[in-house]
Image (cartoon, rainbow, N blue to C red; front, top):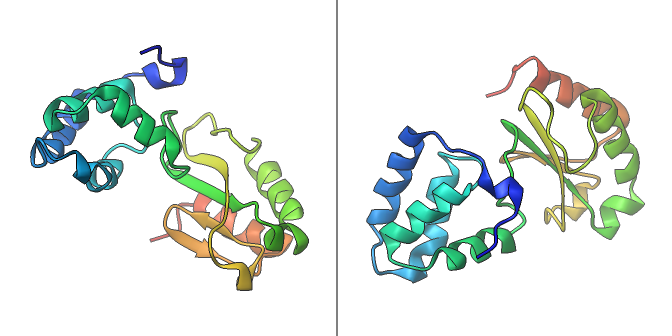
Length: 168
């Protein structure tokens, strides 16, 4: 299997031990891969080749299956990401209600563009197909928390709160 460069970074060995502990509980049960991935994502925000290899070895499934699974879902990543992952809905309702202006404001505040991570590894900006909260669009999700009915002012306030680490 030829693996892209972003997938080749190192994962700390103590994290790999934790990944092995989780995956080993589901040895020989490939249907549990999603459950393993969800648990592992709480430990490692992105899936390096070594993380995929540990999952594959412990679950006794091909590493290519793990990699295919990880790259299929937008909420998973093989590239290192920031502590705060900011997802912007790119659906029609968000677009019509001003998502572009919200994206521009966030990009300006953080000094990065969509698909990038800040140099300090604190923030990653990503598009996602739909957050499922069209009634409060435009909307973003930061890690697991959603924010809707956004304006340039409100998103600026939200991002500054995360910059100050003034969040739970």
